[in-house]
Structure formats: structure tokens, C-alpha cells
Length: 341
Image (cartoon, rainbow, N blue to C red; front, top):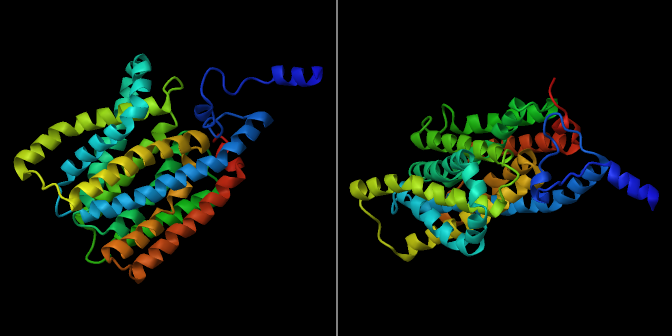
């Protein structure tokens, strides 16, 4: 027992005063080398982290279908605004008190929280809704599947060596996206394709930013704060949309999808995604996100009668092939954790 006590006291605490879900994200940062105990603890978190990432991915797949379904009945900015209002109402009973308790920490890190709200709440969803005006749900899902490529690039810029297999996986997935939206893709690059590409950049930037979340910010309080700030950012654009385009008629066909994206795609999925990144990191969660185009294609075929063609099937094969290469390298751990020199 004395030997065991000496071993325990000789190892630095991986948790300190922080929470386990935040510290689990530490392995893989440039220049860090977690000990055996920390590595074992992180390994136990991989399963729950992957499940949470999968839950978020499946739920978000439905949001692309609803964005496409609402394209001719609810203006994009209004859909985004009401989505976050519904999300706030759904999350408030569980998060409002936590946000109030951590108000000083939120104030200290206000610039970080504002940037996260801008990228992940205000801009990202509005761009998705705008893309839904002219782009199919399956195309949106496949383009958004390129987000993990950008997440990996952010890691590389942060000093993490990607390795040849992971780089090849990124390039393969990117080739699938470029083939999907590039010249010759059904009349060329459309406005909706550009909107959804911009949305992919926003989402990848938001996911990479989550890795930098200050340790004193709790996940629930932070999420609630980003929802509040994002809704406030959208308020002027919402007022302008009302003045220029008018409102929309509340019916089952409009309110139902807004409730879905507010409760499930926003409150539930964002909580699951943020937690997944805290547990397993953006790169590994991003690998799960690659499954989204499959889910979106199946849902859009079943609900919107959007049948994928040969080109779409080929692009999906390239994207998923990139997943196999990229995740195989990530599972090894050495390429992910090895800093660039």
C-alpha cells in the first residue's frame, strides 16, 4: 500500500480543480505527454464520447432535411432566430442557474464566448438555411462532411502532426466534396453550394474553438450563454427580415420543424457535440461526423423524395473512404499526439 501511495502522489493530477470532461480533451495537444493513468482514464471516455458524437450527427442530419423543407415557407434568418429561441426555452430549465452561478467567469471570457456564439449559433445555422433555398439536403450533408478536414487542418496549424494516412484521408474526402460542387456538377457551382461551403468553414472553426474553452467555464453554462448571445446577434437581421419579407404563417408544417431544430438539433445535439469534443477531441468527433451524408441522404430520400444519382454516390464513396483512412490513423494515437517540430 505504501508503494501504491507513493505512485499516486508522484503522478501530477490530470484533473486539478477542473472538471473531467474538460481535462479529457488535453491529450493530443502539442507538447503534451499524458502518463499511463491519464491515458487509461482517457481511454474509458472514448466510448461515451463516440456515442455522443454519433447522437449529434444523426440529429443534425434531420436538421438539413427540415431546412430544405422550410425553404419556401420560412425566410432563412427567421428560421434561424426562432430555432434558437426554442432552444433557449428548452435549455433554460437545466442551464439558466448554472449560467448565473458562472456569470463572472462568463464575463471574464466574454470575447471567447461571443466568437463561439457568432460562429456556431448566429452565422452557421443561418448559412445552412440560406443554402436550403437552392441546394438539396443530400448535397448540404455531403458538403458539411468536409468539416472534419478543416478541423484537422486547424490541429495542424496548432502544432499537431497529422501523418501521411490521415492527410491522405483528408485529401480523399475533400476530393469527394470538390467533385460534388465543382464545375460540371449539374450546371456548375450554385449559390447554395457556396452558402453551405461557408457553413462548413463556420462549423469547423466553432468545433476547433471548443478545444480552447477556458477551464473555469462549465459546459452547460457556456452552451446557454452562446445560445443567448447568438439569438441577440440575430435579432437585428430578424427585424430587417420581418420588415422586408414579412412573417410566416404558423402551421403544423412550419412550427413542427422549428420545434425539432430548436429542441433536438440545437439544445440536445449541441450539448452532445460539445461534450463529445471535451471527451475525445475535435478530430475524433469529426471522424464520426463524416457519417452525416449517409444519414442525410437516407432521410432526404425517404422524406423529400430526393434520389441520389451516380455522381452523388461516387462522391459519398470518396468522402467515406477518406473517413476510413483518417480514422485509422487517428486510432493509432501516435500521429494525433505527436507535436510538429
